[in-house]
Every structure is written in structure tokens, then in C-alpha cells.
Amino acid sequence: MDEAAGRTRTERLAAEIAEAIVTGALAPGHRLDEQALADRYGVSRTPVREALRQLGTSGLVEMRPRRGAVVAQVTPEQLAELFVAMAEIEATCARLAAQSMSPLERRRLDALHDAMADLAASDDPAAYARANTAFHGAVYAGAHNAVLADFALGLRRRLQPYREAQFRLAGRLARSHAEHGAVVAAILGGRAEEAHAAMLRHVTLVESSVEGMLVREAGGR
Amino acid sequence: MDEAAGRTRTERLAAEIAEAIVTGALAPGHRLDEQALADRYGVSRTPVREALRQLGTSGLVEMRPRRGAVVAQVTPEQLAELFVAMAEIEATCARLAAQSMSPLERRRLDALHDAMADLAASDDPAAYARANTAFHGAVYAGAHNAVLADFALGLRRRLQPYREAQFRLAGRLARSHAEHGAVVAAILGGRAEEAHAAMLRHVTLVESSVEGMLVREAGGR
DNA sequence: TCTTTCTGAGTTGCATGCAATTTCCGGTGC
DNA sequence: GCACCGGAAATTGCATGCAACTCAGAAAGA
Image (cartoon, rainbow over the protein chains, first blue to last red):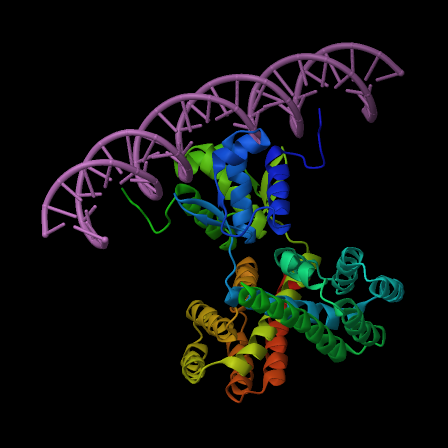
């Protein structure tokens, strides 16, 4: 049989539904009917229920007892809090990375950053977004703390639809790369507080960029 | 019927099992047999399974597909990472609190800290531990960021058995209160970086205290 | 004696069924 | 027109049942 990546149906379901949510295929506020999902994926309600409960704990889905589950909707205030939290945790990772990255890890981070210069210049948002994920992942890994890395990854996932859109803004790629440059320089130089400040500024600028987009969208209609 | 606090059986089960884990009634590594838990709480396996999956996502329980669930065991390395993560996130909350606490929140934090002086002097570890939870909770709340507060609370819960034990060490209460004093002074004075440093130092000292205990325990047998 | 294979008991994963609750909708009174 | 109120349909929460898998231990072989 098609024993795909995941082991149990519940796990595969949780992964698929999470993917559908973060890519925007399932819009925030969308009602998650158990029977409908079961039919859609050709399973019974039991694994669907378990997957939903799992997603509920991770924050992607809001579970309302006896009233069904919906795709978590983020108010503008919550969106701001999510960005602040991500900025702070990523900045913390950057500070720890500056203190404890191995020479090999530093060289790899530097190489990754160099490679992204071309992607930024060629103005390919999708490719840059992928490389960007790898770049931030390298910083998390360099912090040598799985707990913080998990938190940061979870937040990145939840904010993915918002972050991705802003890469298409004119000139955003080049500025993003420049901000990364400041982070890399501080980490390679072992200047912990500077790395913290640079990463905090970088993520905060992403937030501003996203907020600007949302305001313009809201105003445009 | 005894419609307790929780709404559904699954939620109440999750809360009860989590409580049993953090209080140490269920030891790390303990096998969580679905049928046994179902019998123990007088329900069927279905809500037990859903509760376990939820606890698995939050990190209290390790889910091994087709091989059952066990109470998550933390290696010394993971314990250290959990403490570092908690220290960093609490320190971040303290910095944000120093920047954005309202005057009312500041007065309450100050009052809470004052009240704890007596508890520390009377050497009542249990009462101090409860007040300590309220104190740190006030700092999270003052950061005005529900995401970071959630992370911090989750980490506090997971580390509770370890933190609680060290309050019984001679003189630890007085030192803890003194460390809190540095945090409070910095927050009330709006000195963000100082608040960060003071909280980081406080939690790091708790970690050292716990590690010392563990080393002595391991050596004692 | 140690390794390997096989068998069976025990457990998990999932499907199905039913009761309780919520939600939807038409009707009634104001 | 609007609020209020049944009652039916729909949906969730949970129990139960069965198949598949895991693991322990016995039996066979080296």
C-alpha cells in the first residue's frame, strides 16, 4: 500500500491539514467539519478528531467544545503579538548563536547568506523564500537549543502566509538580504548583543512590511 | 453529575493526567496504557487517546506510534535546554514588562513582591512556591504578549517538579526573594535591559540550584 | 549455551453506532 | 417588523468492536 511518509493516519492527517492551513487552502475562520474532512481524506471521523485535537494544541486550529473546530483566526492584535514573539525568540536564537556556533556552522551560515545575494538580485521571491527558511533555520540550529528552535519554527509556520506575501513587494528582497548581512556579521564576529539587535530589527521590519500590506489591502476595497 | 470545571471528558482527562505528571504522581518514563487509564478514570479509550495526543503535542507525553505513550523523560541535556529557554523567554518578558507595564500593573507587582518577603522569612516553601507562580505570572502579563506568556507558562509547568524541590534548600527562599528584588527594581524603573539581565540571572540561578541537587542525588546513591 | 524463528497474548489504530447537545428554521405573539 | 419559542436535523462526544501490529516467551536449530 501507499505507506506514505507519516506512520499513522492521524499523523498524516494532522500534517496534511496543517499544510492546507499554512498555505491558505483552508482560510482562517473556516469551519472544520469532522465528517467532511473524513470523507475528503477517505478515513473515519476518529483519526480526524485526533488530528484536530493535536492541531488545536499547536494553535493552528481553535477547538470549541461541542461546537466544532475552526481554522484559527488571528486578529490584527494577535498577529502583532505573534510577530513580536517571533522577533524576540529569533533574536534570542541569534544572540545564543553568536555565542555558541561552531566554526563549521559559522562558515555554512556565511555561505548560505552569500548564495542568497544572487537570489535577491535575480528577484525570485519563491526561491528566496525557500532559502530564507534555510537561513533562519541555520540560526536556530546554531543556538543549540531545541526548545527555542521548536518555538521559532512553530511561529514561522503560523506566520508563513503573511511573511511570504511581503517578499513580492518591490525591493523587499534586497533589503531583506541587507538586514541578514547585519545579522551574519554580528554572529560571525561573536558580538552577541549586536546579533540580537540586528535580528530583532530584521523581523520587526518584516512585521512593518506585512502590516503595511494589510492596511493597503483593507483600504483598497 | 459532577460536572467539574472542564467541559468534555477529554479535556478533564488531559488536565488530570497533566497534573499527575507535573506533580510527579506519574514518573517520567512511566508507560501510559490506554485501557488502564480508561479504567482508572471510568471512561472508554477514546477520550483517553485524544487527551494523550493533546499532551503529546505539548511535550508532557511522548507518543510512539503503535508502541504506546510514555511520560516524557528529560535527559540532563534536555533539562538544561528547557531551563535556558525558560530563562530567555522570561527575561524577554521582563524586558517587555519594563517597557510596557501600566502603573497599576507596576504597583501590583511591587505589592506582590513585598508580600513575599514575609513568606520567605517564615520559610514556608509551599506558600512561597504558590506566590512565586503569581509573581512570574504578573511579569508575563505585564509583557502584554499572550504568545510569549503561553510559552513561558508551558515551560514553567514542565519544569515544576524540578523547581519546586529546590525551594526546600536552606536559604534558597531568601536568595530567590533578593533576586526578585533586582527584577522588580529594574521593571519599576523602566530599565529594560537591566530587567532582562536580572531575570536571566534569577532563572539561571534556579537552574544551577536544581543541577546541584540532581548531582548530589546521583552521587548519594 | 546462544541465536533465531514462530506463535500467541496484549495493545494500538481505526471504523462504526448511539446518545446528548447544538444549530437551524418555521411559527407564534407582541 | 422583531423577539421569542419549540422541534427537527445536524454535529459532536463517547463507547464498543475488530483488524493490524508489537513484543514476550517458547521452541527449534547451531
